[in-house]
Image 1: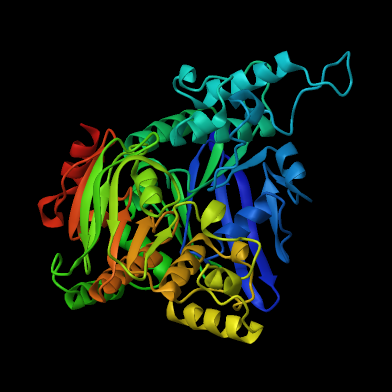
Image 2: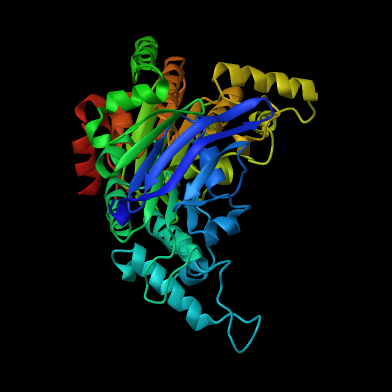
Length: 503
């Protein structure tokens, strides 16, 4: 067998349980060197636990792992790094105030040979320069001295990957010492063009010998870029193969254990029960609103029972507009008129950074609000959270489980539960399906249609253009900081939205 295609990672019979909750049940996986291998599955299927074991964050209860033919059982993340196994997490972890170079070498700073304890700045910059050159098609786009927080989302992703590779080790000639890169939802916050550029670089890294384990929910990315795929369902391997030779419907069935038709019917039912779009009273009027940086000008009118979608490229000002409407960010011009006695609620795209308290329980997160009673019996908190866990089908051990222990899709449902408990009139929903599985996406979008049918007014921002076309009543494009007048969703296609947003 060609050495480049030899098995790099062999997982056999891996099992892991937390108390009585079995998360992995005899998982076996074989991954080649110099390949991109996609790991798929619903939220809660066991993907996070498997990757945490590979990265030394958890120890398996049973099973064995071979890395390049040798037994592999890292005692922690440092052991995994020394073995060349590194991670880029879904949520950004950069220090915004530090430079690109400082972020890349954070935790592995070279020490001056003649001055123990003092960082060798020149060697640190050399490491950062080599790492950025490996990942960035145009390293000039990612200046070493630029504060990481001032970069765009796509370039921050480049820095995250460069740091991971640097932690796995770089040889003096610039070649990789890292052998396995675990990427968790790398394109969930990227637009189409930025995602395409990222995959160009991933293919280049693969061709240089790196193995990439791609944890994702985007079947289009898997079919276009992965060499192999593995599906986990309920802690077991439910399918694997060549994604180019497997129909998307088959992969979905492997993920869900059933076809998607039942979920689609539920969505259609919610739409059928919804009030005619645009028939309700006006609850929000926005006139020529401008943010500190973005947007430059935005006007819209929102009615009860309506879902207004906002499309636009990453960086166009979509999130900034929602934050202004929610009162979180200042505006430098324009007027906002709200006619909603129950107020405005925001579902943040950054669920880990500001949407949830990951270290606190589900019940505490559901009750987190200025409107919540100042004093409430613990039994009431748990009962209320248990009600939402059942209603939204949140996969959790119970209402006292920490939010940070849940999968991404279930964390998103906890955010939604809080908004529903608050009973806001206007919901500002930012990337609600980011990083969640196919079934959860269908459930969330169906829920939004049902909420609109019950009289809620919703502004939906999504990078997934198909979600906007199929879910919204009207869609407006935010282009170069200016929000264009909305048009009926039926008049848009994914292609026309992309063309309008990028023109």
